[in-house]
Length: 529
Image (cartoon, one colour):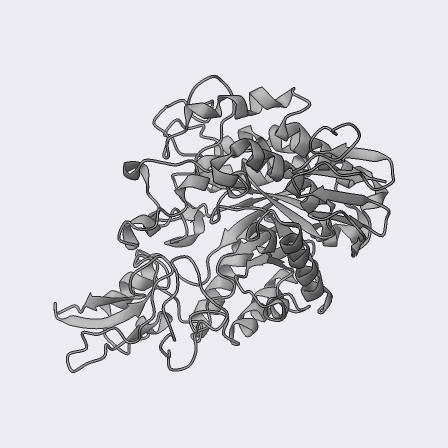
């Protein structure tokens, strides 16, 4: 990997490989069982070896951790759980010395309920300037005891909580689309935008290279806060859901982009959960987000028809506005690909399919995102009930197990937990003993390991001119298979069937699974030129 130079430097993100670090689970140097910034610094050599362009850090700002950092109480400080500003500055310098850029999460839809603004709002009365920073409303019914509308929280339960006024009487309700500890901000209040822009400049001035914007399809709320037409699943919503994807959100993104444009070479990527390609495209117009985090490949089965449709619709959406496509197979909110692709819990098949799909992803034009641990072939972990800490578990009335299974700490070395993640075995989520063959140490020198496949694939993506071009050309493939060519000459073949198939003509660069008598094995991918 080498850093772009000249005019290309400002657009480095257009074909970057970005590695998401969930800081709690990456590497713990302090010995408290929770990952930290010092641990990330300690592993920068590993990230350089992997070959990624940039890291994206899930929230590390000061937080009571009701939602593990996505409830921010001070957006311009580092939470002591992870370190301090001096350590963060060292991380940025050290990463830049290795040509690795650093991006971080912004959480603009809501704050923590312990943010000074919200505590001020609770002390102040209805109609006050302090409450106008959030979405407070009177309840329905003669005594105001019914929430202002029927909205539910993404995490389960009502999206409204009632407060007690300073005199102890039941008072107004406040909106929280997520946990009660995460009150939604009122983006019609100009103070809210001004504060976010100050936060952005604070981190950009410290050398940050960009931001991932949490709930980028949120923030704007519809006039009158109309009722939802029907209930939706926990952690899900539809495109006609009034809680999200309201037209006013695009003006907010234009204001965010105006700050990014002051810092050439930086970028932002928004978490945009919309199904419609036309709606997705609106977020990546030239004056809004640089990139939209695209979940298309992370939400389809290992099925050739579904995969091709996901690619076609994604490419068409971004091409319609001249934007850059993005791809990912997992992140901290969705099940890991190994488990998702495992039929009836068959992890061996899940790993084979995940290996094939990372080659498929990295062969596509645009920006690729990798969730920490995917390069080790980690599956989700079936944790015991008493170990679950995701707020979804409690807020759903203990019916939805939440996202902890994909957030278990990474195994680095050794024969038993905590596998070098920490000096204590009491890690914030328990690590399974079955991960012994999946540690970095076990895979690093094994040329057939999943880690080695990732390293080879990323290196080839940078080294070979055949990966050039912004489009893909599909051509004939056996049933259950896909094959496409990049304008530069790369051919990617994916066998999602249960039978070996002939390869397209060409010289093999890389295969995810050894050939079977010259044929591409089931659940495998190949690159050719």
